[in-house]
Length: 313
Image 1 (cartoon, rainbow, N blue to C red):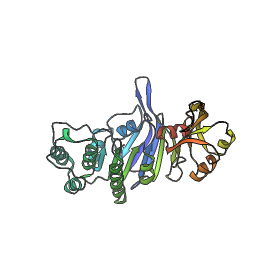
Image 2 (tube, helix red, strand yellow):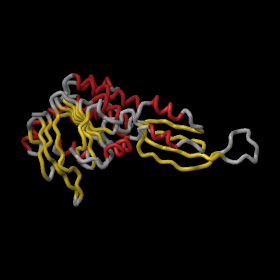
Image 3 (cartoon, rainbow, N blue to C red):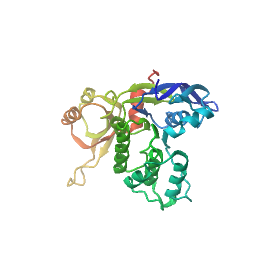
């Protein structure tokens, strides 16, 4: 039996279904990811696992305890560390008061070590903390009592890249210490670095369970190229593209052209590219590219292009 067992849970909000017949399990010492676009059901799943809300059907167990019974929640609460997507601490409190309250209930053997590591001072007021510092405080609260299970709801959302790497690095250390981790995110890089398995959620259903190596879009790029017309449109047929769109336009003539020089006819081509970078560059090299932009593809677009319409497992 897994440390976390989710079996056929369905949740409803009025006439809307939040999670639909969702099942998965997380093994001891495993880092398990929940990946999906906004609204896929990640937070609802986590809140249901924690017993904060009850499913219409199905069961959730943590360490073989029924979290939807009072006895089960009481038995398992000290074994869980939880980072919410939005911590929402009382602005009138200080960092020390937040930590004191948590320690009084769950313990805090690692409190001093973690506050020092993340540079949090006990006398700082919550209202003076920025988003980055509040996320770091949530991390300390979750791990200061050395939990066996860490349940983390998008812990890197809204922080700068350096802080994101610090958070991911710390969670990776905890996983290597043997902590079982359930981790939701829209960050592909974090998922690939941390997780042993990744459940892809779409509209409250598990569409696929992937490994970091099997995710089909870890190197996907959003490409936008402005090409002078005419050009060989069949060149793009060689590429692994998704969501290809194009429209004709005109661009100003080169600097130094005479005042009577007409604008240049051009086409703007935009697409998601999931293949090798060398093949992309080799394909566009013969084109008269006036401008081009290659950047990491938006996570929601990658997920939509890959999984929209795919039946659940």
